[in-house]
Length: 502
Image (cartoon, rainbow, N blue to C red; front, side):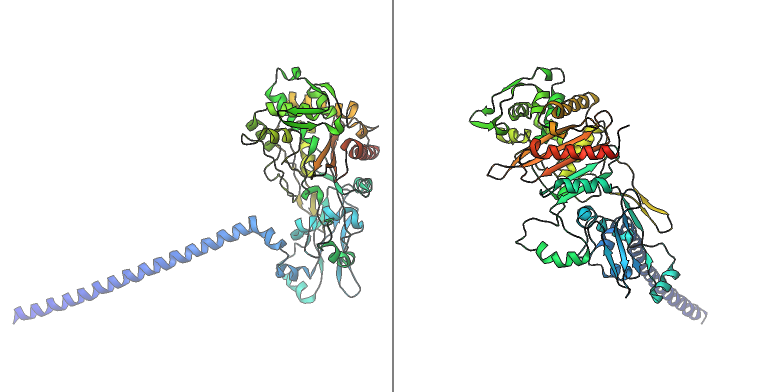
């Protein structure tokens, strides 16, 4: 009997052990599921945090500025868009006006004059209106105040944007262009502040005028592209303005012998079966790298170009901004250049004089010119000096950004001397100013198949202490020396008459 009882207890214990074992196994499985679910939630949470951080740093502006973001439009109903001001921080370039019925509309006091850099905020957005949209429509108020404003319909004003644009210079450049199709960009070569940006043909950005002209402005029959900012989006062969870079590279590759370069120009350049003329067939006689630039001799630069190391020259040009996005928040078209081992001799000849496949925007050419003026350092151009809240708090402020020197001090000294000679004794003499010494380069860039030319001039002044760099292009304008240079001279005379050289 005792043995049987003992056996029964042993069996019960075994049963309980099995039950406990199964329970533990079940709990382990459940715990495993809990761990997996917890890990998944943790991953999801971290992903959300990561995306939110990315949005705050990178995506916020893009989403807020998206014209299809209806939430932004809803938010803007109770926010009066801030003003856009000139660099004097007083003159209003764009403002919001409220009608008697409470309707708010945008107003542009200078109409066409600032149309392209300022842009518009109806029919989509362009210019500074687009670039700074999120700040123009932002107010720093607490959540409860925002809720009260939403309920009561109270409207508050967004931040104000202070630009770098000089009103007097902008108006003068606008008038100086006259009826020409083209663009002017003026900037401080040491800071990157864009002082003037004009593009023609233009348009009136005031809502009523823009609405009335919209169908005409956007029709296929309108080939003038009034809405395009030619200063930033225009893509042109640089013509002889590009010879500045060819000269720099030739000096760099021949530091001890460049002075020995000599070319005798009879007005026509021959290379194997290839023939190229200098502008209007001018015979420049015997020239060196300095006089070749001042007289803009195509034959001399074709000869220099053929001798250059293609890889090294490409490296120089790309350092100056070709084949890449420029370091600026201003929307622009990328300049392009091809100068490689695969290029034919004819392509090399064309590239050396700024023709062929080489394309550049006026803004980029102004940056190249500014770099030479600024001890070889290229500054990033900007249009917005600062953003200020209604209470005077500075919300955002521009900082100067510049590259390391792209050329040596010796190279800069020589190219500045050459560019000064362009104005004092060469093709750009009409660009001179009675108030300051100007250095620069003319350009007559051929396009199409009919021999038409874009007229260029790019330069800076004063030579001894550069304060302003200006680039002009006139589409189909003809000779840079005959057409663009005189306009440049007028602009420099105006600028230094109102901003005297100390």
